[in-house]
Amino acid sequence: MKAVVQRVKQTTLSVDGELISQIPFGLTVFLGIKTGDTEKEGAYIAKKIASLRVFEDENGKMNLSVKDVGGEVLLVSQFTLYGDASHGNRPSFTLAERPERAEPLYEQVADMLAQQGVVVKKGVFGADMKIEQYNDGPVTILLDTNKE
Image (cartoon, rainbow, N blue to C red):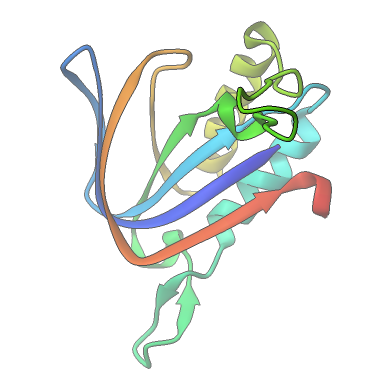
């Protein structure tokens, strides 16, 4: 499982011109699920996201988590994180999990984040989503369960 975690001031997500989700500040997380990923990888990613200290404390040091600052998480499924463009110019997505297995894992990660006290908003799995975000910093962290 891979996650691209971005600290944001605001993010909105729409599908077909309809606003689906928005967060006032916190983390926008793009989640990619690899073939063979399980609940174990989901638990690792959820714990990391909830505990990641990327918000500044009173001394200007990145010492606080999204929970500490009362931020929210917008969790977006993104199979293209497993795109492989090492051969040619058109990416192959053979490493990405099939939708029927990936969607339940995506939902589990959202539930695990919520169980840790994080307000979680979601995108629409498999939809053509339009995302507007106001990055803060910018701060972007890559998480990968294959590099535990």
